[in-house]
Image 1 (tube, rainbow, N blue to C red):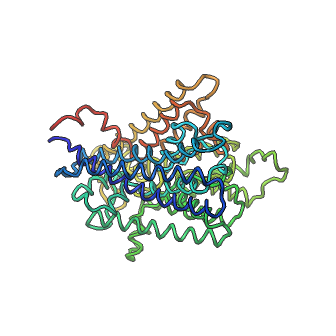
Image 2: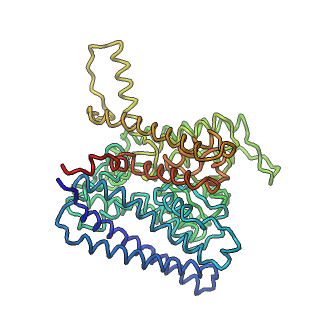
Image 3: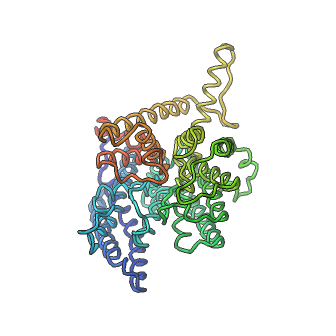
Length: 515
């Protein structure tokens, strides 16, 4: 069967139109700020307006070019739509940063973080994939409208721009199921309603409801409206972009940090469980094995890191001679464990200064990630549950070869296809992580990078966590890396967000051949 490229082009054109409409709201916000006397918004308003028009025109042209197609979205078309959507969306989302840097009156005198397109693309891909890794050295120098756009890319990418696409654009028809299942994270994405479009709409309504709830909670705790919106977008999306260079450490309020902890945990839960709660299915939620494992791992990690910090206190910042209290230590430990395992990446402390046990715990949590069907990245708790069950069953077979026992997670049996796909994914994940680490070591000069920095940078981007260790740690950024390394890390973000095979399948020659 021939690959229907016209229907792919039409779908991508519609996606650009949707993104341009969102960007138009950012341009309106910038224009209002400009009229109220914010001089920094001048170049930002022009950049946003230019990209809005370019995106709308480009998207419209693509839609018209593919409008005559009578084909439907099959499996190959769905793979192409999902993979190219994120690449194309990041390309468009990067342009406001790049144009703004070029339009700044002092651009010739001040080398800015966004002066090269590769930096802008890295930031945009990090936003949409909710990685949260940044090249910005001083966040506060960026206009508020671009900071809002930066946070909005998180929010759009949280449940997935393609899931949003399915929710609001019924013209995908029968192809919406294929697109939804390919884009949704986790080994077995769950439909909460019979129709995939209805499922996407329900999930986005829950997402919006949680967003409103966190914005209100942060404002009640004393955070301003703008910062509350930006941090909420980053929290629920498991993203991590902040409006402050110091991240959440800029808000020492215990109540603000507690609210963010709660919503980071909620963002890492399978969103299908929220729908079950709304239907009154409390028992199902309470008995869910993945939820129990997810919360248990968070609790265990918090205990390990807390004990490590109490036994080996971190070096105090040079700006203070007052040692951290036990309460502050516990809060930093819990906040950081939750932030890293949910792959949000907010920081309240420089965890690179912590003891090895604490850092090792964080690194393990980074790979574990959140639940399937959540906004979090990582391998996912469900996959690890399946792998653990299979390994345990094989151990039992070694001393009880005649026993045939079905493998289940909860009350759900695990078939052979799911077992195979889980272990293939884990092997592929490890291979991609190793290849990325080797490439970073090769692309950087020997004295500029060490194995800890290279490996943790790849772990942070592949797991869409944000900060890593060493020279990409909590108080550092990714700006110093070479352009080649940033391309590698941007690719890892995409692979991690789309869970490898939706992207890697495009590199198979058979994918492009007629069946």
